[in-house]
Length: 155
Image (cartoon, rainbow, N blue to C red; front, side, top):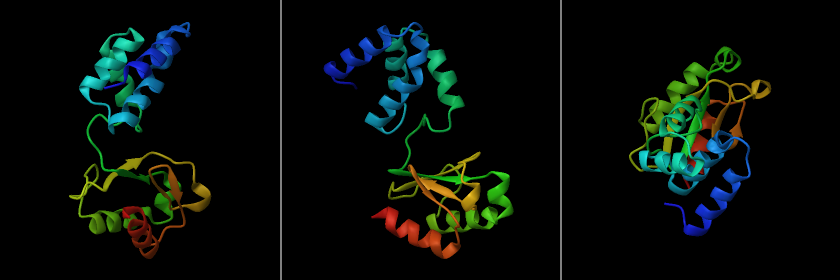
């Protein structure tokens, strides 16, 4: 899972904290970065490093929408489902995305390129309707713009 060197650094980081729980989100991100998602094995390793019960890791992992407890595509498309985006037509654009990708909410394309997930707000009301592909924000979406984005991001 983590190299011996990385484990040593993570343990030192946790030891430097007054409360080991403070490190849980960082540790989960580390595991996800290394393996693409937070598997049960990775959750157990995070709990071990932080010296907390694995249930604490599970509780946090299910709370944060950017921690994935199952495999996802190489890129995750986060569709903003805030009121601002919906007022600006995101519902129809969401349907367009599902049709273009051939998947439903929570699904991953057959080539493993994309996973489609809603997210409660991405703070981009000024460019609504908006979505993110990975960490890249796209706003003022139209069906044509979505098609261009998918082509570009798939490469």
